[in-house]
Amino acid sequence: MKMKALRFEKKRLTSFQIIIMGFLFVILTGSILLMLPVSTKTGETTSFLDALFTAVSATCVTGLVVHDTAMYWSAFGQAVILILIQIGGMGVVTIAVSVAAISGRKIGLMQRSTMQEAIAAPSVGGIVRLTGFILKLTMLIEFAGACFLMPVFWKEFGGPKGTWYALFHSVSAFCNAGFDLMGCKGQFSSLTGYEGNGLINVVIMGLIITGGIGFLTWNDVKCNGIHIHKYRMQSKVILVMTFLLILFPFLFFYFREFGRPVFDDMPVREKFLGALFQTVTPRTAGFNTVDLTLFSEAGQVVIILLMLIGGSPGSTAGGMKTTTVAVLFMTLYSVFKRKEDTECFGRRVEDNTIKYAATILLMYLTLFFTGGIMISCIENLPVLTCLFETASAIGTVGLTLGITPGLGAISRMILIILMFLGRVGGLTLVFAALSNKSRNISKLPKEKITVG
Image (cartoon, rainbow, N blue to C red; front, side, top):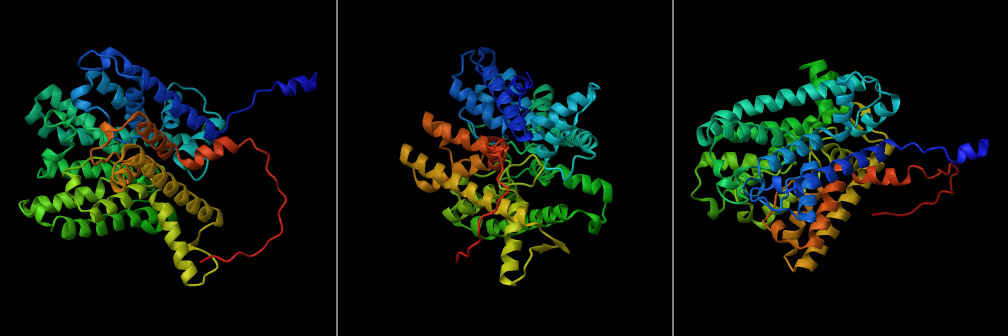
């Protein structure tokens, strides 16, 4: 009897499996809603593949689209997309825990553990309080962003529509989604009509950076203020990497790309804003204020690198993450200096962290190159153009050179898979698949292998 009870005992889902199933449930629900005739302006039924692509792009806060958001989707459809963006940006688990906490339900250890994995928190302790902080911070910043955007959109579109546009773009920017409603000015035009508008540029960039730094870093700022020496090592690394990834690409874009003859007619002020905006948005927002097809191949490659790096852990952004790249460079430096350990800000980095960083880099590069080459072969398109698209998908960015709407079903499925993996994380998927496998605690004999 006891054996039978054990045999039929339900297996508990791991944190990684819950995260993946949560995203899949939201995506499927969003796809069904977007397929309804009420979701389109013409009242037509959207095909499942198009609805799925849009739902995945919104939930994974990517921004790649097969239909112009403003011209194709109705107010209901746009509202569904915005809700998917909000859920995807904050995280499915964060939303679920927030709702449970507000309703007065007790948050168990399993939910706390899942939340810890979802937002990359250092420990389970204080996770509910941190969830409340994330919810309040998100609402505050998105509301403030909408208020700053309202004057411009009110003047251009009127009160009700201007308010909706301000709210939509504030949420989309903070969640690093890249969805826009500017199709009324030109299909798939993004923010190219505002390249000279300082307010729009500054507010959107501010929202992107704020969302991409990560909630844990902002919690450090809240607790320690300007006393940076009290911050956790991760927060220090994130702030330094964010600064460097803005400074150096900006200098390259301003002096190299916007110094080319194709941009000679652009005023200096617009060149400055354009270079800064195109530096910020690839990590990983997806808006653009200039036509990216005008960039040289070198400029497009720099954007690809920025898209692959992405934002920071526990943020609304995707990509490999700034900390992954930082750990690899710190390891490179320690090897050059013949140090036994990787060190940073007076602290030692764990060996497991270095292994994870190297694994994530290899996984991203493999998926990025494989997807790009496959789409290039299927669609007979230039490899660089396809690699730009796959970097945008795996990095959950949304920038495009204009080929996404014309891709076939197989190529779209490749981008869907890349967007999903980019948002939930390749390691999360692997851990979910292998978490129930028995671990072998024995160790094999060690032997040296030469590398380099």
